[in-house]
Length: 161
Image (cartoon, rainbow, N blue to C red; front, side, top):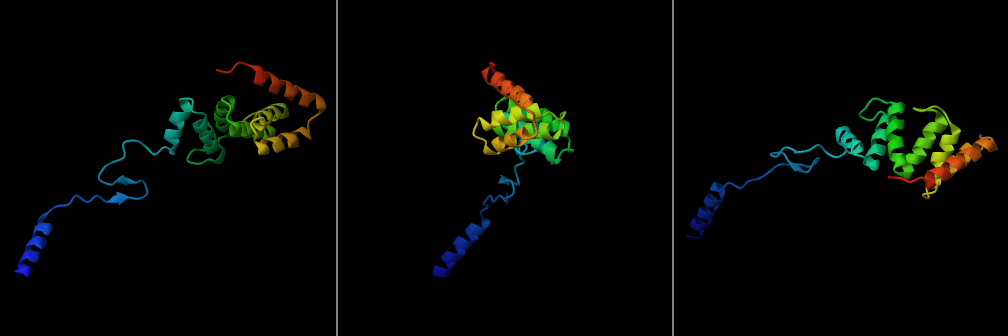
């Protein structure tokens, strides 16, 4: 009788259908359910956020263009997106834009603008930017440094949206 009862339970359980979903661990989305939106780190998703004014996405897209990561390497496009982020106060983007100006990549080489952007970043406690600014200032004549400092002062006092 004991065996008959266990056999009945086993048959009953085997006839039940348990919904088992196979999980794709790379996306954590059940395979049986397609993703409804792209992962947030795709170029398309980053571009959409950047076009909507997201400063972090703008810097991320600029970085993709700098490295040629899933997009063609394009310093001009990188500088365009880096500027959009920098103008919103993103300290890393400000430093990176300053580097682009110092190297003349994607923008005309201009140490005054390099100094300005690096100074704005350094004012937000970005130590790397402070060091970069100090390095750029070593190759600038005093009059150009004064010009750059005036740009920084005017930037800080200008009304920002």
